[in-house]
Image 1 (cartoon, rainbow, N blue to C red):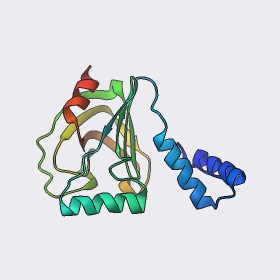
Image 2 (cartoon, rainbow, N blue to C red; image 1 turned 90 degrees about the vertical axis):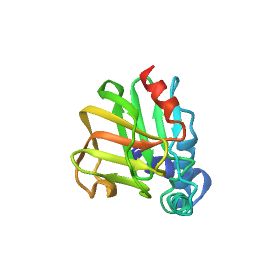
Image 3 (cartoon, rainbow, N blue to C red; image 1 turned 180 degrees about the vertical axis):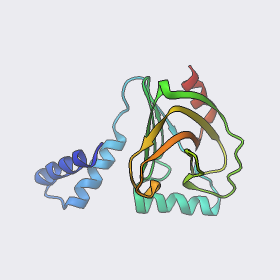
Image 4 (cartoon, one colour; image 1 turned 30 degrees about the horizontal axis):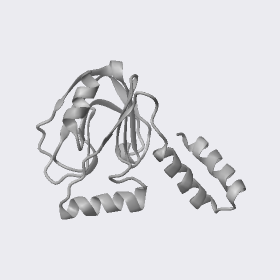
Length: 173
């Protein structure tokens, strides 16, 4: 949902409920995230580590960015893959996916959204359950904090998932 649509829906809710803008906006976003996915869509949660730092990261993502374990994930439908983690939002047309496989990348204690150069991105809450998606032609991220406010291409995306094998099977199927 675009910023303009969120703002309009928040203002409409303000008029109906009398809530302040921030509360109305939070409610609109929560309702949108809880909305049922399109027919044929599947949701795969991003894996978050249960280590001390993993729990801290999950709590900070939830408290500061409205993200975290309950709302970060990958939505897969017949035409598109939508990856969401905090402010990171990437839509990949399924016809652009060239390969998908379990990743053996060693990410150590790294958690979050990272560009490792040349269009390679890591989106993870854990070092476990990593899946690498190769994309051609590249997809582009909107300018934002994750891209340091520049247009960034994505050729390869590695994401940590709770059930990576089910995701791979659903994407290949």
